[in-house]
Length: 365
Ligand code: NAD
Image (cartoon, rainbow, N blue to C red; front, side):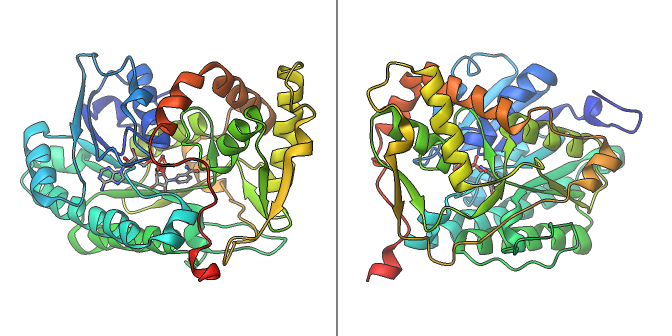
């Protein structure tokens, strides 16, 4: 996996934030398999973070978990001084657009203040490293394509597309990206940013489209389609996202951003239809079969971005990354994972979220 200019073999000690969530949990598992690095994972364990996601990892000698908040300067400073990372991957975030409509404050707090707090602590630590360690140090910020706003029926986001976020979630991620860029330009902190399209795969909290639809279908509940169902996302299997983060960390150029996408545009209706067909095939005796009968059109999300599409030419040509899963193979693996991991689903759903519709508060009041 390593290339001549790849520094990942020298990285040594990695601090991951948000490693008990969907992308973070998959990334910690990826590191365990691929890297042999010393790993520290700081996570606040919000409703979206769950230690069950890391079952089997916690006893590994090269892994350490810290229950803490990236927006708490004291915790972050202590952890960085104690663990002495050679690189940091910031994945912790509030991540659900619908929740950001109902309660934007947590998004500003974690995504903006939390990223700021990390940058301050990291920059102070980085300045004190010796020259060679400072040179090799990396701060990789994991972000989203949603910062670019909404596309019409054609075109794709490139790294130079102007930012135009439209939801409290994407605005808070855009703000965090700008802070990261500022720490590179102003202080020289060796930062990297990845802006990735929609992910799916194992361990995704069942409020997001794909796991919500799978679990609703399994219980014979309606499959809610927002608006016409025509909104388009560019889907990427989470393992391919983890691989992209790893490539950028090892071989990306400091100060640069990299778009990551699956070249798999699908409307929400197409995604749900494919899920229904897979469930029909894998569960021939299910009482809700054919699952398509559960499709239910509901009010659209306010300011629902119409289409996202990623031009991933830069990461493909400069770093040799490309997705390994097709949408069909990744979705099949995902459905099979949820069918085989109902215990994980029961644990994560035992919190406060019962699958109800979120993100309409301001429209209804
Ligand atoms: P998630 O909601 O599943 O996980 C977020 C994790 O962060 C949770 O474990 C949570 O406990 C933790 N966390 C939240 N606030 C924290 C805080 N203040 N301190 C420490 N930990 C905190 O989210 P996700 O889907 O894994 O997304 C993670 C990141 O990846 C986000 O920055 C998101 O923008 C980016 N991303 C996600 C996708 C996607 O489709 N899931 C696509 C592109 C980019």
